[in-house]
Image (tube, rainbow, N blue to C red; front, side):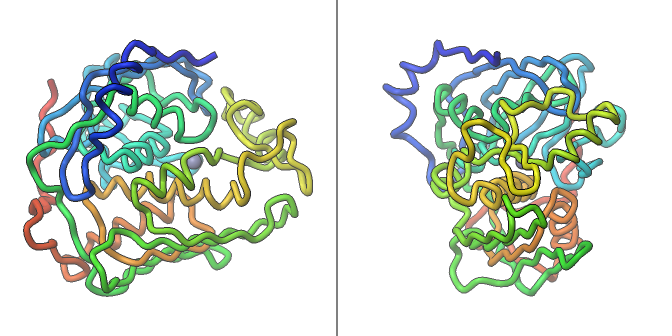
Length: 325
Ligand SMILES: [Zn+2]
């Protein structure tokens, strides 16, 4: 079983939850907090500590066992086949995998600056959703910092395409209201079928509409992955498993359209690797970690695609890789 350290809970209830930062201010944790759990693909047991960090620090992963820091940025993404994997820019064998649900939890709680220490190569999967990470952050509490977040507005359409009609695109929106997202999926398995969802990707919406939605996979994929030595930590406790028209989890789904909600949660986590608030309309069909990352790379490949929003922190794409401690 995964264990949480509940010592900070009462403190958070007394002080934390009412002081959520607004969406234009940088924010960090009030206190450090930790948990343990098992990686979905590695099956490895890891312990994780979330620590407060100063203004303009961003989210940085620290491989405690290697003494290396890996900034949570889209240009450090090294693999997207099963999950989103970051690698150290100068030591590419130093990786941290399955970061997307924690990144979505940071987006949900408004945390922009944190140090995430981990003593292994993959984050705990917990129940396959983001809600345990949000619980952890709520227990630590969050605090607004006296600096605006960097924010950009998308100025012209940016589109990337994958196989079988998959695409993701950003287009300019009239209001500076963050990401207005619309996601559609389509699976041959009748238990999933075609689902779509449109939502503003605000912290509140991620928390209320997406956070509890679990990772899912098809039974034949699980069998193939486990034969290849992957999904070693996978079970019905941390994923919805679908066999054609059946959901194998005894308790069924947690919420209606759980599948597309989880895909949108992944989009929110992967796009948080921009490190900035993006004002745009986002449309995606059959999105995945690869497409989500390609979208950010395409957005930032040309400075004419976006402009900095007035009064916000300038975006420094060329800022030096953070020095190692
Ligand atoms: Zn996911």
